[in-house]
Amino acid sequence: MGRLWFGGPIYTMENERNAAEAVFTEGEFIKAVGTYERLYHDFFDQIDNVVNLKGKMMLPGLVDSHMHIIQHGEKLLRLDLSQMKSANEVKEALKNRTANLSDGEWLVGEGWNENQWQNPAIFSKAELDDICPDNPMLLSRVCRHALLANSKAMQLSNITKETLDPQGGIIVRDEDGEAAGYFLDTAQDLIKAAMPDVSQEYLQQVIKIAVDDLLAKGLVGGHSEDLNYYGGFTKTYQAFMHAVNENNRKFKAHLLVHHEVLDDRIEENLGFLDGTVYIELGAVKIFSDGALGGRTAWLSSDYSDDEGNTGVAIHSRESLEKIVRKARKHGLPIAVHAIGDRAADEIIAAMKKYPLQNGARDRLIHGQILNERSLKTLTEIPVIVDIQPSFVASDFPWVIDRLGKDRLKLSYAWKTMTEDGVICAGGSDAPIEDANPLLGIQAAVLRKSSFDGDVYLPDQKLSMFEAVRLYTVGSAQAISQENFRGLIKEGFTADFTVLGDDIFQIDPETLDQVEVAMTVVDGDIVYERTPYQS
Image (tube, rainbow, N blue to C red; front, top):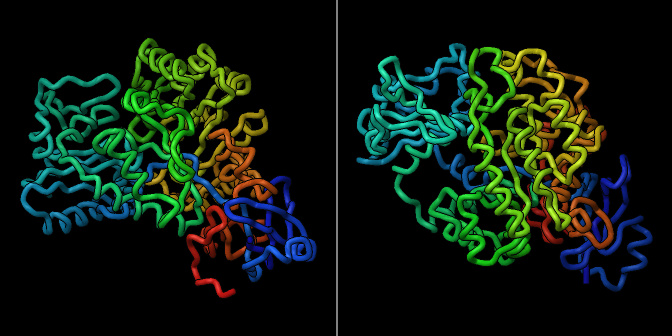
C-alpha cells in the first residue's frame, strides 16, 4: 500500500521547469510520477493515504553537502556571537554569560566575526581576562580556523612562552613573544585538549537538537565531519547511531571520517558507504589549509593585505601523499578542505597522482580560490567540489582586501566551474553559516553581500534551477548515489522538501522569507509546519 501526493507543482529536477502533477510512493521509494488522473487510476487499489499539497511546491529532498552536525547543535545550545555587529556587543554578551558560570565551568562562545564590527580589531588577552578572569574562556571565530582564549584557559593548557607552534598552526604572540590568546588552525587543538570530555549522552542530545532543527529547515540529510573531536571515532559514531534511526528520527547523515581516526574505522572494517540507511560513512577527511578570515588559507602568492604571508600548509607534501596512499589502500575517496589556490593545487595533484580505482569520487571542499591549472585538472579527474554559496554573502567585500582584484576571476567561481563540467554540490558549512538551504540557494542566485548589499562577480550567478540542483543532484553525486537520490523519479527514494511558495516563480530577493511546509524522508512526513489534515 502507498501514498499519493498531489495538489501542487512537483519539480522533478531532471530538466529545467519539468513539473509533474502527482507522485505515488510505496514505502521508502517512488513508484510512479505523472498526472494525477493516471496515477489515481493505475494505483487506485494500492492507495491507502493521499496528501494534498494545497498549492505548495515539492522538490527532491534538499541535502547539505558540507556541514558539522554536532557543532551545529552546540551552536544552538551555546552563546552565539555570530550576529553581533560590534566588539562592545560581544563583550556585553560575554559579561552576562560570565555571571552565570559555576566554578571551573568553561565559557564557550561561537561564531564571532570581527569583519562585522566597525573596528575589526581582535580582542587582546588582557581584554578577555578583564571579562572573565576566573573561568577558562574559548571563543571560536566564525570560520572555526581560529579561536581566542583567556589566561585561565592557557594555564590549563600549559601554554607558555616556550610552547612551539604545531605543524599547520600558529600561536599568535605579542611583542615580548608571549602567547597573545589568539590561536590559528591546528594551534587551536592545544586549547581544546584541556576542555573536559563530553559524555555520549550529551552527544546524543546535541545530535537530536541539530537534526530536529535541520529537518525543520527542509533538509532530509547532511554530509558532516564530526568523528574526531568528541572522544574518538567509536564514541561519536555510536552517538549518531543511537540519536538517528528509523524508529524515532529519520535523517540521512553521511559522515566523513577524519584521517586521524582512519585506523579506528579500518579496525572496525567499515568501508565507503557502510553503516545504515540513516548513518553511513564517507570519504577520508583531510585539512590542507586554513581560512581567509585569519589569513591562513594557503595561497600561491602573498595576501594583498599582509605582505610576506601566503597562509598555512597543514601538511607537508610527503605527509599529505602518505594519507592519500593509505586511503587508496583501503579503497576510500578523500574529501579535502582547500580554500587557497596553492592548497587546491597540492591536493588536486595528489588526487591525480593516486587515482581512485573503484568508480567513487574524491571531494574538494570549498575550492574558493582556484587558478587556471587547478581548474583544468578538476575537469580531468573524478572529483566533486563542495561549494558554500553563502560565503559570497558573508565574505564580500572584505575578501577583496585579502586577495586583491587580480585573483577574483577564479574566486568563488561557481558558474565557471559548472560551465566547464566540474560537478558541484551545495552546502552551508554550518555552523559557520546558517544551515537554511534557501539562504545558500539565494546567495548562489543573487551573489549579494550581507554587509553592503552590493552584488559581487555577477557573471558567476547561477540560475535558480542550477542552484537547487546543488542541493539535490549535486549532493547525491558527491556520495555516488545519483542513481537513486536527488530526483523525483521512479525508483528513487521518497525524500521530499515541500515549500510554501514556488521558488521558481517568485522574486529570488524573497527566498529568505519562504517557509518550509513539510520535510519527507523515505515517504514519511518527519516535519510539518502545520499538521497535515488528510
